[in-house]
Amino acid sequence: MPRIAQASWEAIGTNVHVLVTDERALDTAAAEVRAMLDEVDRTYSRFRADSELSALNSAAGRSTRVSPLLFEAIEGAIRAARATEGAVDPTIGFTLKLLGYDRDFATLPADAPAPSPGLVFGRVPGWQTIELHPIHRTVRMPARVSLDLGSTGKALASDLAVAAAHRTTGAGVLVSLGGDIATAGDPPVSGWQIHCSDDSRADPRSPGEVIGITGGAIATSSTTVRRWTVGGVERHHIVDPATGLPASGPWRTATVAAANCVDANAASTAAIVLGDRAAEWLVGAGLPARLVHHDGSVLRVAGWPEPVSEAA
Image (tube, rainbow, N blue to C red; front, side, top):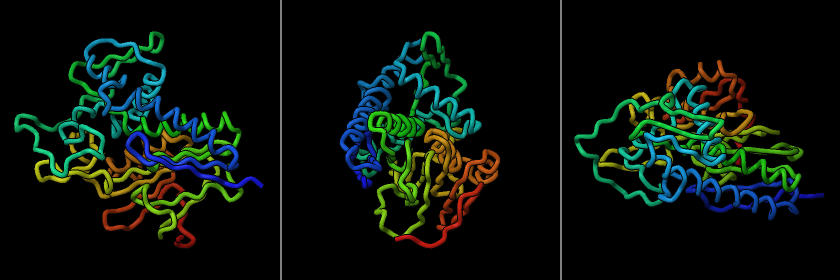
């Protein structure tokens, strides 16, 4: 009987895990995922000067024709912004630079200099300022607006990579990119077992909550992992578009299940930003979620199952 097999490596600044229900399909599936991640990195990495996104940001103020992949990624980011009522917004690129997140996270200094006193944090320009022309596949945003697709873009990469791997192999496939998990094809008999934690790098054998899924996607957003210091002030990467500052709500981690990873990630990020309003919003959207308070207490909403036992 075919066995589940797994390959893991680092790419696009995060950990990559590929699982297949048939070990004979692993090499092919992993190759498909690598190829997709290479394309994603060249297309919309904010940290590569030669990426297509960097060129688009440099052309802010002008209408620019973009590749199908970049157009799809920006469309997805705008849909996420609309669905979350602006809690997730792709026009945070300049704000992230002000916060010191101007390069791959692994290369950030221990304590970056504080920004110039003349630079003030405030509401980001907003997704409504982005103009898309689907027929000509062009994008235009006002001068000095900089897009960042790190949130929905990574989730889209999971969705695209798992679809490509399943299409090529026919096997059941799970792809995880730093906690953005997408599945395709028939799952294992017992379903895909997902270990829920603040950090996607945690050992799956460590104590914690495990949930089984037979399809769809799960995404986790957390303020506990990507943290750095600027001018002696600790920051994290989930920005509240209304203030331009790191979100300061009650939740340190949000995990959400949805039909695809883009929707799951948009909702998990929005939950961190929405804070006290998150639970009501998730219930209204019909998205099962697990919210972890800063004190470690857990709130499960919209049908997220209560744990039967602690898994190790």
